[in-house]
Image (cartoon, rainbow, N blue to C red; front, side):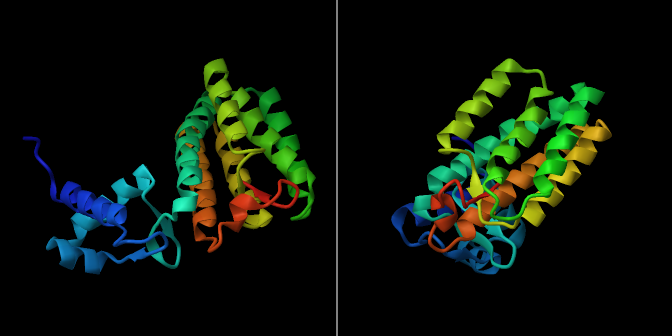
Length: 220
């Protein structure tokens, strides 16, 4: 029989509570309560929550902590998890292979994007151009094809409810990592940017962010 660590046992227990409906979508998971329930210290609980977030069962919100992902958000959240892994890989590769010409074009798109107002319809198109110009710099046709398929699966691209100021700050940090040719930082900034978008969708009480028309939704 395979050995199960305490964190594995806690994670399995929480999964069963979610599947049974005892933990409903939107419920907050408090580490102290879980530790008491499963008779473990806080450390295995934290490890279990990290596993469940990676699997798409929960998400972490800034002021609430770990929250069960709403059923209507499950597919979208899974897409964000896939994006976070593939796009961080592409950004890391891009930082290793980027040329001055690539940087000039990416910078130009970034400057155009941050000049646009929150509700400007052109933001969605420029946002996609910014991200994909970076991924083109990775010079991996297979990876680029996978990312195109994934964005098409999101019906016009990922849309979240955060402000354009926050998105622009994320984009700037990513651009700076590319300029330094810092592969690890480029990958990490990309992952954080994407998962922050997933948290904004999960935090919307009616799933509105995922349902906004492309002309008004905020891009990731």
